[in-house]
Image (cartoon, rainbow, N blue to C red):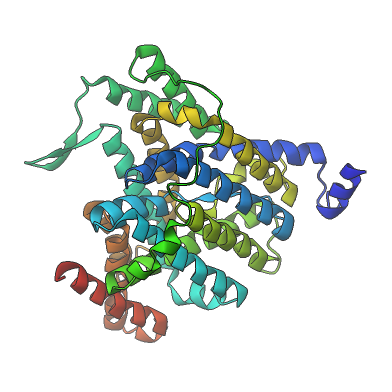
Length: 438
């Protein structure tokens, strides 16, 4: 009876799928992206947030997003805190701008409210059309390079050098070899197209670390989920802190990065699964609603913005076509909360390879940028290169939005630039002024 109801609701017959196939697809997707349960606390923990609370918040926000995506939007697409925007939160906003994590979390909440509103009022088309495709691609690729740089640094492969600014790390350090091992293993698994390659790579690296004594053994394997108390509701109590132009730009960046990352991923996955009809994605508003809702709840309980996950492609590849795939993934995220003690063995050397590999995947956007058009190539290049070299996602985005209108005007293409982009040009100029002359 239940199976029949599920079959009707999720349209298994129409989509030519089965309960077993959808369950396997959900499991495959979860294994492919389970690393975020451990990587997100590590990244946000660098900002001073309680790792245990972030772990639980990550699991809950991911489960909620997946369940709404599956039940309401009926897509086999998973949701979880995005890599890239969490790095922006920790390394740019908190560590770079010296903004308390509590204030940054309030910024995420405001961005989530705005995101929710523009989703409800169907303003996504206007916003997507306003930002040139080249800058969207450059943002994705630049964030990829930034994440990879962080991974290389935290893994000990890239270190500071007073003469050359950066240099290759020392190979006589045991933990650096953990990173190298994890990177090589993950690369091999990715090349062989093994489902869950990143997660398996992290597990094998952790095991090697414990065997060699470079990582301490965990006190337990399973326990109750860590308390949300250190982060729960903090965003609401710090809303009044968002009172400067600098913080307004931070909120805008949260919104832009999350919005375009989600929109691009949704379209790509829908194309893979064959859902695009007449160049349109059915129920896209519901899909964006799933993301905006989980982002809103996530900010309240203590995590960075959520996003659709490209790892959902692994579940789609094994036959996932209905929302039940995402439902299974969401349920597994809830069960994942029981394994918080394993956070102790997921060190920076364990997560570093994952960050590097995700950077490689995100850098693929570079191939779509029209490099032969110099007026487009320059702002795109500055966006991509600016993020890792300034150690700031927002600075890289600002460089692109400032230079793009200038090069387009000089090229006689000023009319092709959307008015919103000119507004952003002024906003980012003010941002740089406030940042450097405060």
